[in-house]
Amino acid sequence: MSRESAYALRRRADARGFAQAWDAARLLAAEHLVDLAWDRAVEGELRPLVWHGEVVGEVRHYDNRLLLGLIAQNRKVLVEQGLVAPPEVTAAVALDWEAALERAERGEALEADALGQDQGERALGPAQDEREQEDVPPPLPEERDLDGEVMDEAQQLEVGLYRFHHAPDGESLLTNWPASEGFCGQWYRVASDEAEAEPIARDPADPAMADDGEEWPGLEEAFRALLPAEAEGIARMDAARAAAQAARLALYARSACGLTTAAEEASLRAANPGGCWPR
Image (cartoon, rainbow, N blue to C red):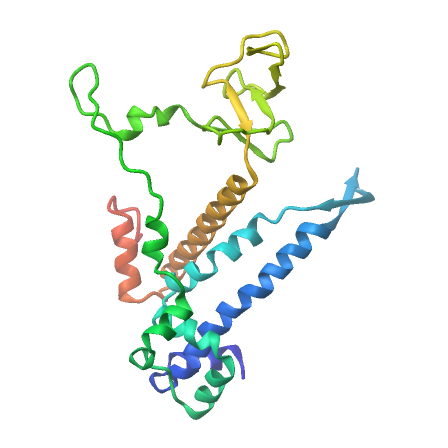
């Protein structure tokens, strides 16, 4: 079957079983992505090293940011693109793949109301809202500034002072966001936004001093290396942002060529209240 025929069949009202199997197949494919990410993380990939236009060697590259983001965003992307079936149905189809193929061949579909409560819970696991609400710290008590105005919580915590800075390697990031207790990573001194980060460590004899003889820098100058989980989180955000931008750019291109639907045109107009689009 050609790509065009497959998409045409997926859109047909009498092929909902095929559409459900399509979504479940993409869900199952995430397992392969995990294996692929692991291989690349361990083995890396060889890239040519070019000097004055000539290949003089090879360097092993371990940049997996996009792939990590793809793994993390797999389910989110499916939802954003519009699943034909509810999530619990897609998950149930993925759990019994052989039965899903048989239903697709018979032109049948799995109905949400045919799922027992235990089957739906087994497919989806704990509710997302319940998982996200676990161990959420309560908001801070109300606090006022010198003018008596109620401050936002972010103002109370001086969140605006926290930022990121490039590490000396030019690729990884540093941050002055608070670290977890017992942080053992590398610290850096950053005198300004344009300054290069300089590695520092505590003076064993005086924790208030750095090993370079200077006083330990304050919040705006003391930066630390990101923890692995933090770096992966930023990679996921970057990948999600890039995917969203690519999707919207494609929408503008379709609009310029007169290929968009009324709903898509309405979305573009709503996103451009200043009249920059359509042209």
